[in-house]
Length: 292
Ligand SMILES: NC(=O)c1ccc[n+]([C@@H]2O[C@H](COP(=O)([O-])OP(=O)(O)OC[C@H]3O[C@@H](n4cnc5c(N)ncnc54)[C@H](O)[C@@H]3O)[C@@H](O)[C@H]2O)c1
Image (cartoon, rainbow, N blue to C red):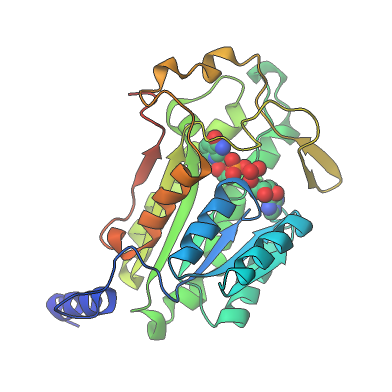
């Protein structure tokens, strides 16, 4: 196909041909799979994308919260599905992708969002703590993406909108005290993002990352021991202690506040929607301006 024909085809697909009266912030009918979508940033994204017309598939290791999130979406009129399960189980990403394709017939967007931190100073960081963070923030997104290969490389799906959004962090861009494992993994996911964008552009797949700064969720609130991620027989306590005073000081954040989950979700809508139809291989920072 000549590049100009392709351009016209894409244009018609995105805006419905000229004159355009389609709202490019809408993702009507797009099937969007969000890992870790039961709470925090993932849930806010599910809610916003559903309001913009998407069909939502949620995965989370917390089965009760995943069901509640999917039920809430259904009650609001969204076609929603959930599959609870632990993404650290090597076989699970492929099972998840297959289940969503079986339920909806396709996947248009994957948001690799599930995650947590297990912090430690460099000299106290164990291999086990390093390993689990590489697994959730690098191996899991890689396995999710690989599981999409045959579906997305199928020539019959060439013109279907397809995109991936990987969740990175300012820890990956700038490093972070106590996060040798997390900062390494969150830097790695940016390399993965660029590689997928380069390899899969020819299949009409966009792939971008978002590096969040301080977003107010349970992983950044002070740990009180009540919020845990139950994984493979261990309870991982989430939260950043109050003693991290420098990190909690907003005076170096130009917008002078932490971000909300709605702030975080807005970037995901932009990247998932036709507004970002020519944006790929990039990492958007959502930080309130921190680290300028
Ligand atoms: N909150 C922030 O300030 C911040 C900053 C930078 C990056 N991030 C990243 O954003 C993403 C979302 O984090 P959040 O702040 O919304 O935290 P959160 O704890 O509110 O949500 C994360 C979700 O992931 C799920 N999850 C964790 N491990 C899982 C597994 N093995 N299988 C399936 N589900 C699993 C959790 O159950 C939880 O529902 C993470 O990748 C995190 O690293 C967050």
